[in-house]
Length: 171
Image 1 (tube, one colour):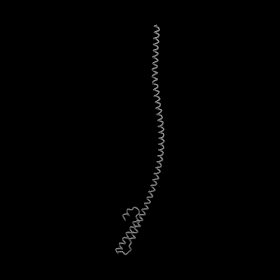
Image 2: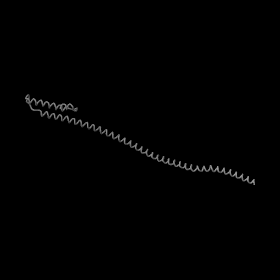
Image 3: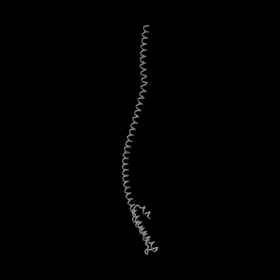
Image 4: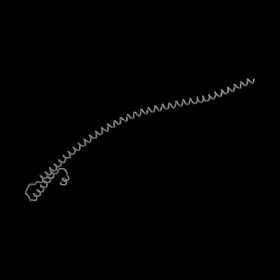
């Protein structure tokens, strides 16, 4: 019992006093039983006092533990409130960032549509330029050869005209 009382870090005065009364009652009963002392048996009284002392110590320990639990509970509640506030702030920040990202996504989709439209127009322009080139090439070929044909035909007429003039002179 003394060993248990020494391990207690709480107030042990009620238990120590009760233990002392218990020991005195035990010594008294030994003296009465041995015949060295003619008195009343006090062992049951000492045992009752010991139980009361231990009960008082346990009640004191329980009260202190209850106070510690209350203090820890208060600290935990304040930590929960602080963490909740922090999480609310973080959620607000995330909601803002999410809105920014959604706006950026919308702008990117609009830019993608515009780029696709520009690419289509560019392809259409290249196609039109290719068609114009394909139409222009044969026309340029005909024109170039037509000019050559006109020169050659002019020379042939001139040659034929001079041959006709020579034949008329000869006839």
